[in-house]
Length: 269
Image 1 (cartoon, one colour):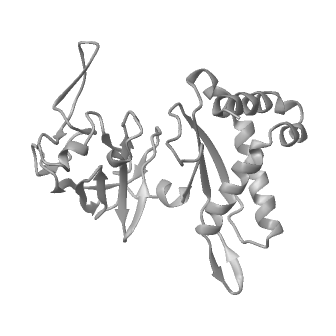
Image 2 (cartoon, helix red, strand yellow; image 1 turned 180 degrees about the horizontal axis):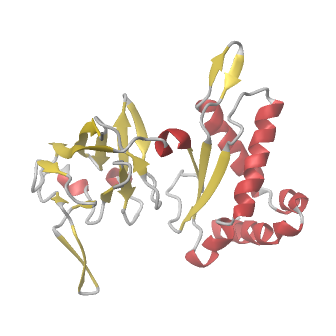
């Protein structure tokens, strides 16, 4: 079945489900696929303590690909989030998992179609409490280019938003769209894998956090992706409004170009 038909049927079932939660499970078999992928991600991020499986994270984010903008609102309502939260809690309880009582699920959508071999469901695991409880900090954040050639091989992040891309100025329909701060102008192979509007970094004034946001317009080229490498593990940065929280020492990979995020912080008195 075409993905558009799957989305249409699933969206119709979700729209009608507030009139009967049992009907959603019956009319939307896609729930089984989403539930299985979510549980697989939970198991992959669990550990054993005292002979029991423990899932210590409190947020499961589920992104649905291929959902057009006119259908997106259906999947962003509170009903689906709450319904799926209870479904996952019940499944974990049946398997004797220990998990946070406030475990939550958050759905988001993306209009881009899945690439070849990519699922239409993307599951991410986060620790919401750790992020929200982060103390306010002051300090200097920098980006250092270690692979590729840019206009600034070391850039201090002094703005609330720092744009990263292939050209200095980006135009759409003959009008300026944005200006990049870190520009990969080199003709080397690594620099050429950076898109015109590849990413940006946002600084939250209240907490001092920095988040990496994926701005790429996907055209199926896997060599121009965006991900971070932290503690030897690779984490893809998916295209959504929330982005990924950056930590000192993170390697940011833009295609095959690489920059390192550094943060020297000092606690506010």
